[in-house]
Image 1 (tube, one colour):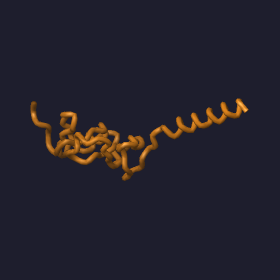
Image 2 (image 1 turned 120 degrees about the vertical axis):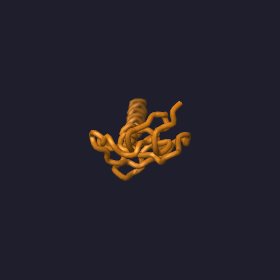
Image 3 (image 1 turned 45 degrees about the horizontal axis):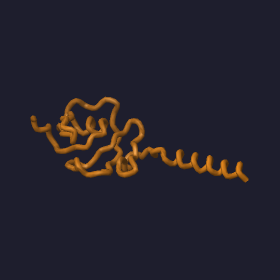
Image 4 (image 1 turned 45 degrees about the vertical axis):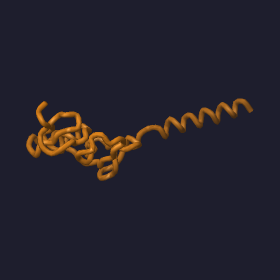
Length: 105
């Protein structure tokens, strides 16, 4: 009886550990959020602009090239860093604060 209880406990614990792993999202699917969904390799999570202090913010998985273009409209990240374009900020996993470069401090 005691071995059966230990076996069930071990099975329950292994299920909890297996289910606790984040599930990768697909292109166009929701990422981030309360579940912390990750995008697969080669994709980045694009968050809505201007939502820096919103907890558990969800974004959308988008395909990003291995190397982003060097041109395009600059984007200010919620971390105060100016990114070259939307591709760079999505690859970095940073929320965009606003379009254009960040204000100088």
